[in-house]
Image (cartoon, rainbow, N blue to C red; front, side, top):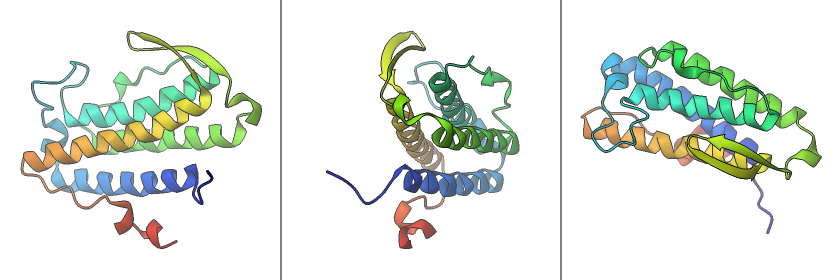
Length: 167
């Protein structure tokens, strides 16, 4: 089955959504990024800001894994600084877009072993890119829920409400 949309459509939506989130966090102030993720996390992240950094870190690291490059230490990006976080996000997105146009077509299906946390897995470069985009969508939904529960309004982030849905 072939679909009349592409990864570019999802990345376009993600770019738009990131701009919405940046504006949201600038409006809400530092308390929104400092909001606790609660007691039932896996221990890797404690705040919304750390989860935002994780979104952009994952994109950075999946690109590095596809390229078989050393992984960046992203812990130096301050999780409480909206501008620093979203500049990092812009850099990670530029790296992803560059990968998409420069990676050899023949390499997308090649399996490769990689370490993700405590897991060693074998996946293709194609799977890593699908993971990058779906991973981000999932975490933004978590963040929206956490903010709502804490009394913060995070705005509308639906694709159908974006300017992209009419094109």
